[in-house]
Length: 446
Ligand SMILES: Cc1ncc(COP(=O)(O)O)c(C=O)c1O
Ligand SMILES: N[C@@H](CCCC[NH3+])C(=O)O
Image (cartoon, rainbow, N blue to C red; front, side):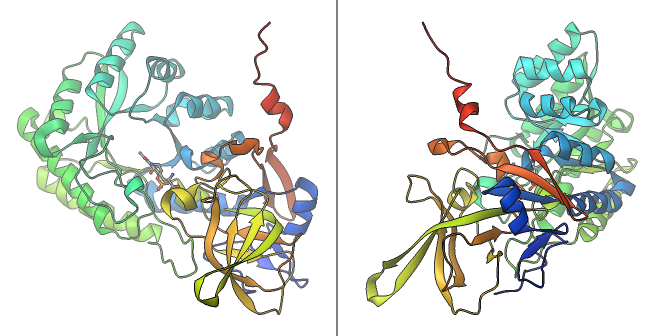
C-alpha cells in the first residue's frame, strides 16, 4: 500500500525517507501548507516529456496536436509550444486562451460540432492553421465568412468511420448514432467532401477521424484509418488523383489510454505511431497517392499522468452494511466539483495516503467529496490504512486530464489552485478561486 505505482503517478513521484510523497522534488506536505487543498499538482517535466515522446513518435509522419480540452492554461500552452506541438481547441474560449498565451495561430486547429459564427470568425481573424468542419451548416457558414474576409480557409472534414471503440459509451465517438462528424456509411461524408470542393473559399486539406477516448487497443485506430483511406479511394474515383492530392493530411484524433490503476497497460506511443504509419503507407500506395501526413490529437495521454490531486481528509464515518460488514466513508475537501469523472464515467482511480506511511491494517474505504449529493464519489472502492485520520493527505493519481477542465462550482466550492513542480521548486499556474470571484459575477440591479 505504501508503494506509489510508477505507471499511475507522475514520473518524478516517490515516497521520501519520511514516508511523504514528493513530486518534482517537492514534498506534498509542503505543497498543502503553501497552497492549501484541494490542489492540482503537475509535474512539468513529466508533461513535457510526454509531449516530446509524442513528437518523436509521430513527428516523422506528420504532426501532433495537444487536445487542450484535457487541461489548458497559459503555462501549459507554453509548455506545448516549447515542445514543438500544435494545439487543438474546440471553443472560442479555448482559442482565446491559447492566443492570449501567445500560442502561434498557424499551429492551432479549431474543432467542435457547433462552432458559432463568432467562433469561426475569431479563428479566421487570428489565422488559425485549420478548421475541422462537422456539419453542412458549418461548411456554408465558414465559406461565407472566409469570403467576407477575402481569404481561403484550410479545412478538414470530420468523418465518422463507424468504429465501435472499446471504451465508455459517453467517450466513444466513431459509431454512427452520435452527434460528431459525417458518416461514411450512407454517403454523408462523400456529400460533405463534394460540398467543400464546390466552395470558393475553403480548401480541403485533410480528413479527420476520432474514435473515442481512453482506448487500449490498436485495432480501432487501424480500422478507422483503413475506412478513411477507403473514403479517399472514392474521392480518387470521383475527382481523380490530382484533385485528391490536395487532401494531404489524415488526422486520426486522440484517444490513447493511460493507466489509472496499476494493472492498466496502455499502448506504447511508438507502437501506435508505427502501426498507423504502416497502414496509411500501404493503403495510399495502393491508391496511387503520396502518403498523407498523419496528425494525432492526444490530450489525456499527455496531461493525465502528469497531474495528481491532493486532498485533505476531513471526516471519517463507518457505515454498517447488511451482513455485518461496514464501509468506511472518507470525506475529502473537494469532490465532484473537481473530479466529475467517477460519477460520469464510473472512472476508477488510485488513491494513497501521502503525508505519512502507516503500518495499520488496510480497510475498505470509499473516498467521497463534500457536496450535497450522495453520488459525490471520488474513489468508489479502495483500501486505506485503518488509522487514517482527519488532517491526513490523500493523493489521487492520473487526474491531470479532464478533471480541472471539467470542474464546476457546485455548492459554490471554489475551484482548486493548480501548481507546477519541477527541480525541487513549485509555482502556482492557476490561483485558487475565491468567494470574491463568485461575488464579482453578481449583477446589482437598482
Ligand atoms: C476530436 C478530438 N480530438 C482529440 C481528443 C482528445 O482525446 P484524448 O484526450 O482521449 O486523447 C478528443 C476527446 O476525446 C476529441 O474529441
Ligand atoms: N472528458 C472525457 C473524455 C472525452 C474527451 C473529449 N472528446 C474524459 O474525461 O474521459
